[in-house]
Image (cartoon, rainbow, N blue to C red; front, side, top):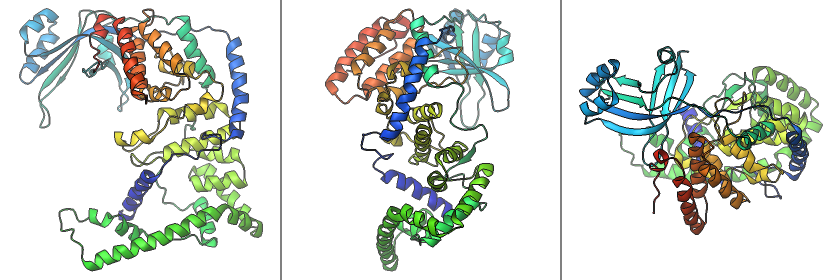
Length: 522
């Protein structure tokens, strides 16, 4: 366990030390000119397909309503619960519980989902606006079905009993009007359709039965792929540095002395100094070994007639077990084929071990590269959008690590995609999307748009959508979020100040129950 912990922390330290996420080619992109050329050819066909395809679907906005939020704490909570069960009016409730928290006319969304016990639930959620956080109430779907979709003048509430960790409390929504939905106008529907045309809704990056992998998901059972890697490392005499010395060098031993004296003796200090020197020597040797590795492996393959036999035998096993890693997949790509390497990668879902572990992003970029080179557009774009939206599973993810993860918008701008239409199409929210429709992360694509080559069009388009009374309130708020994130990530402070003034004017055109909640810092 100690060696595994040392290995895990070392991975995170190594990720921190890296200056850039991916290799950058001479064209200034993370994809080679050869890959870009292949992708442009596909995009030409997709753009032509979009121009001639029939528009035959009406997209509906999310169901949304206005409600007053109420929160009651301590001893009043149980009494309030009984009053709500007895159907008390909002006016009487407000008069009776003067110490309660009241927040009126909030946008409420309603969504169904299955919980971890496979029970159908309905979540009612209000949006965060200004300094007011969003609120959520979850009820069993059978209970909500009794409302028969008639919510106006009714309560939905959640009561929490007192525990050793929290006070007794009650939260509730009182609905001012019914839930409503509206069709999106054609100009917005076409944005969604364009995104579905580019981001193939029938495709997915990973296979359904892909196996979890990563530093916390190490398979301890020996495999032919691992044995093949070990065979290469042994023949090529890969430099070695012991895990015990890693522990001393990076202070993992100190972690085990919590609550004890950490004062080091002269012998311990001398030992660490010696190990530091050994690590410097190891690092020099390792860099040389890595630089020469592939050339030496090519030579080994020519001399050893069992090389290809062992490689293909290991590949056959890996296809079945779905146990592989970057190094083995590199060998498969080089000596068997890119299609086979991509197959292995799509069968392996990488989970980040810590905030600084960028292996899920590296894995996605490797998939994107192989997809481009094997002309699999549907896999390429989803994988690249995952990088842009930072859509990866991690055991933990501190905000301090997120700044170093770039969005790489110019990599798709160079492909002659209408990037703004694509991003708007995956940022609008609708109640009846195509199955497997790709949704953006508003904060991440806002950051991506701040790096766009066409900032004027970005600003004009977003501000027009915020002002558009024909667009539903929820999507107008999302466009406000998107512009706010875009502006926050701009580098020019003067432009940012000018944009705040533009945004204030746009927000002023929104319904008062929304615009009154949005505050701007001077």
